[in-house]
Length: 184
Image 1 (cartoon, one colour):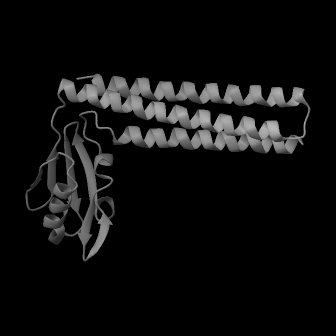
Image 2 (cartoon, rainbow, N blue to C red):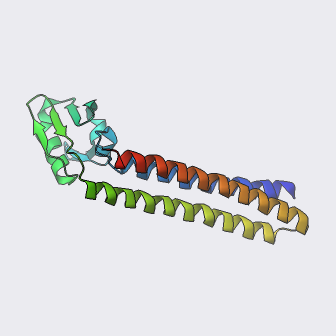
Image 3 (tube, helix red, strand yellow):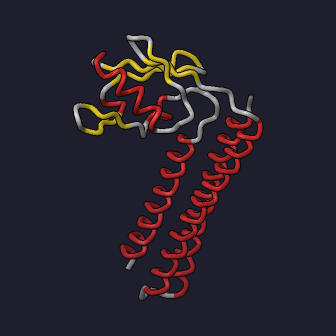
């Protein structure tokens, strides 16, 4: 019986971990006005007829906080890389100098910063909902089990403590991202 309870807790923890990982990935996609190679993670280039991720055919660097440089391993695909960045509609204008592509990241307006902070808040709330859903499912499984009410209550308390810990982590991630977004 104890194994069953541990399995329920482990499953809930795994679901909560997944929600936290998803939140961290979503927060990386929110641009805070600083250059980051992750901004180009979804860009696919037509590489000899095959859509290929930009990171698989080029070096992507950030020489400073406002610039991304892309150095394709083959100079012949510079135009394709430039075209893929424009098609991705990321709000960047790539500049081709014949050797590499340079992207200057524009500063964010105050209104855009507030919008991004709202998006970050929304993503945080979605993560909290996922965590609470994992708690609800775990508690339902605990109630179905054939153990005494005292053991059920103890495991429900453990699940609640786990939930509180993950919710706290979500709040910390949001506060850091909000600060990063709103800092000029």
